[in-house]
Image 1: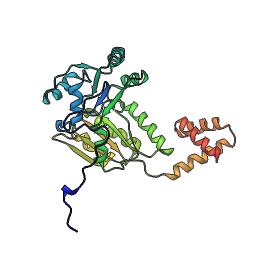
Image 2: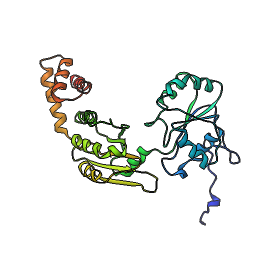
Image 3: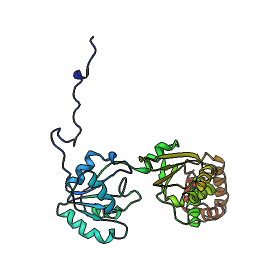
Image 4: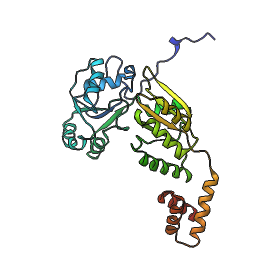
Length: 305
């Protein structure tokens, strides 16, 4: 039988919703969330460019940042700021625009809108009003840092930015560590500002110990760097070497610690033998420092056994 060539292969059927080969698709009326590059402008997708070209209005986290992107691609469109300080007040007028059939695109300074960026309140209001909301996928710094970290990719938890002050960070990190002692096992991710990186890594080392981690910096840009090591090693390195640019911290999941889980169960059994389930959970929560909801959920599970 002769070898088959590419010409012999049947053409694949177009996916539902694919544009015809001889024309670009138009975005439908409604709100569309458009992912934009996190550094390298070449990562802008053709669908994202179409959406921006055809929008009646582009909502921007910072109009100056978006203006550079639009200018690079020769796109002329009306832009308007939407950020944490004005989002709530702008929602009624924007909903009216959507009701009138307007095409409104929402972008953040970089990456996927809503992920540590404004827009959630507008999206929630549009959905509650029964208005169409769609999204065009694209770059995301947290996911890229995760896949480059060398740490388990699933499950993972993205926590946004940690609190800016050390005392609050230690409390927030401590709650996560307590959840791990109660059974949580996931790779953890945070964004962080360069001037707080070393301090945040030191606080993470206090709460999570000698855990494998990675710091991803300036992803897709000229000086992209992913540094891997333990939390103490990374904290020491960045205490001596000032970091620059956009940063994501990735921390590996907790090692299996069945002894800790068994100890919690034993404490709960002893407390439940002499107290109501609710009171037993409260007593053990106070004794262990674990969140009461987590301890109560475990007590309910033991009660059903």
